[in-house]
Image (cartoon, rainbow, N blue to C red; front, side, top):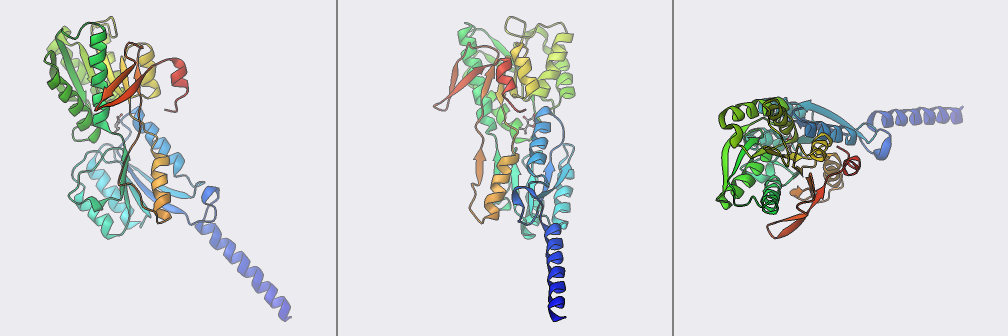
Length: 349
Ligand code: GYE
């Protein structure tokens, strides 16, 4: 009888421990670890880049990998991001991941996260805070370097085409004002304009990183400057798509032997497809696949290891042809890839 009771108790215990196991852990690579809850405040869905970025985060922080991801799309509004973060704090998530729309305005809410002892990882664009301990780590691109690489390419391209003494009129369709990606890319261009007495920056205006606004801004720039424009510097691929639509509708020939050349950033599949046709003359890469990079930071924090405060991603340069083989920025040489369908097919976004 006693033996039987022990056996029953043991079975009950095993059942209970299985149940406990079921509620706390999931299958996949973290199978016997506790599920980690990550609250991710995403900027929005303004561009192809952003779509690829969201996909990378969702694929990485999946249930099968041992995570519960609370994904919040802020529709490009900082106030939405601030309330998402407050929500994550209330839900006592294990980590907060923030892709900030602009750099400033985060001190108060990040202090709230710090007081709640929730580590904050910043991804993609940066935050400008008075106290760096308000976030644990940042991973993303060197946007100013991207701008400098693009301008070094333009300089070399104009030289190769013997146009380096002509007047070059440039318009800048900027990203969301105050976003690191805008600040860096605009700064890169403005520094290069200062260095070239024959480069004129005719106008700069935000296209909000969207195709629709990019098109609208291009239309108004065409009205104002017409055929004076030689170079359209778009701060992302979607703005470039909109600008190209506006230019072709207005009867401009876009490309190498046309009226105007269009430069872009991101190097998404669609962007690079326009590079192969020459509609986009240069696409400077900005890599959106941050999911595994953020995961690596979280893995280290889980293992109580130290993490780099700031981590830049390596990025490439894609041109419509091989006129310029490489560019040198701040003493470092970067290879330029002449874009083909084959090059695109090997890329994931
Ligand atoms: O270039 C653009 C997106 O912050 C790097 O945001 C990101 C930028 C990217 O909307 O396409």
